[in-house]
Amino acid sequence: MNRRTFVMSAAGAAASAPVFGSPNDTVRVAVVGLRGQGNGHLRAYQRIPNVEIAALVDIDESVLDRRLGEVEKATGRKPARYVDIRKMLEDKSIDCVSIATPNHNHTLQAIWSLQAGKHVYVEKPCSHDVFESRQIVAAAKKYGKCVQHGVQAHSTEGLQEARKLIAEGVIGDVYMARGLCFKWRDTIGRAKEEPVPAGVHYDLWLGPAPVRPFTRNRFHYNWHWFWDYGNGDFGNQGIHEVDICRWLLDVRLPVKVSAMGGHFMFDDDQETPNVLVATYEFDVAGKKKFMSFEVRHWMTNHEAGIGERPGGGGGNTVGNIFYGSKGYMAIDGYDTYKVFLGRKAEPGPSKRAGGSHHANFIEAVRAGKPEMLNGQIEEGAISCTLMHLANISYRVGRSLKINPATGDIIGDAEATALMKRQYRKPFVVPDKV
Image 1 (cartoon, one colour):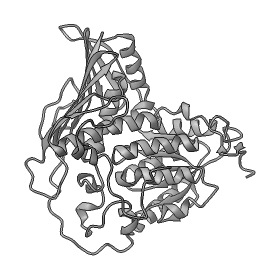
Image 2 (cartoon, one colour):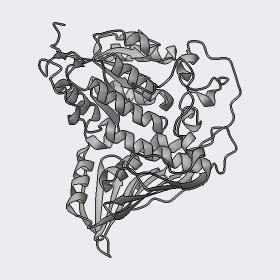
Image 3 (cartoon, one colour):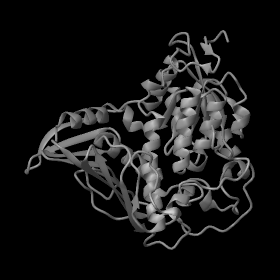
Image 4 (cartoon, helix red, strand yellow):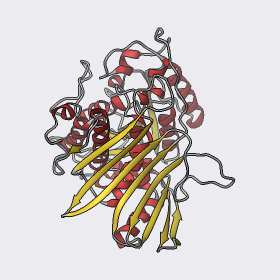
């Protein structure tokens, strides 16, 4: 305990009190899930002064050992090695847990970490269903820790300025926002059942999900396209765009949700749609606002300059468009905006500037102030709920009426049943956190 000073209360570390004695005290972080996004977490923390990557956790020992070697080479220190997050959480010297596992494990692992007294950075989407959106928020409030949702756009100077300009009326009265997720997604084909690879702890990987035979398509990355583990491209890439739409449009829960689409062109193992159009209606103090989100999986056009690069080509189109009475604003990715004004779409303000979401998380942890987080879990959970409601609408094949105060589905028992999944014991998100 000579490394830092904890301020304790009967209920644990008070959220409003400084957790660390000074900015020079080392913050010890464990990273859980180490492939694509988790590797990004490792690189981000390595760039922040006085942050030690103290432990690595992954159920695939080949990935785990590769990352251990990379971190040791980069930092001169070899983190502790775990395949089970629950074992790592027994280490009281770990301050923060950074979660980049598949979606179906996010909420449970975050709640476990909070119960163990850790601050949490949890990748998007923070939940696998509507019930989990509520439970992760309840846990964050109960344990008083910092919980950052992995929506890095909130920490870029570009989008912070874009939000400020929209609030100031740069494009006038904003009535509509669109989220675009047009990405080149080739077929995943069909994968045969096979024995679990050596070094893969499949039971831990499944966690709350039902037991299914192992296939390569249900494992690394392609798990996104199966309802047991992922939420389609809506929960993979699209959650960023829906979150940005909601953030800049300044809305919360809708009164109506409708989604249509399907799995087109490819004959493969994918369950989730690769073409989807979701629409939302909001009532803001008696005034209607509208939001839409689109997934396209193959050839398409760019829009409003989003995704266009020198030399042209068929790259991804990922971003947002906001429409107002004086013009429109295009968001390209996570850090760039451009404004176009009037009937002639004359160029207005524009900016491209980044920022570090992980650095913001560490700053809030040092201060012991969740309110300093740019991606507060309470807001992230609402954005995830919007994504889940649209997926439910798609799965039941009809529009949904929503109670905007609670997010509950009105008068549709079949749709309501999809707000909470069945859990495989002992990997159960509790009703009371």
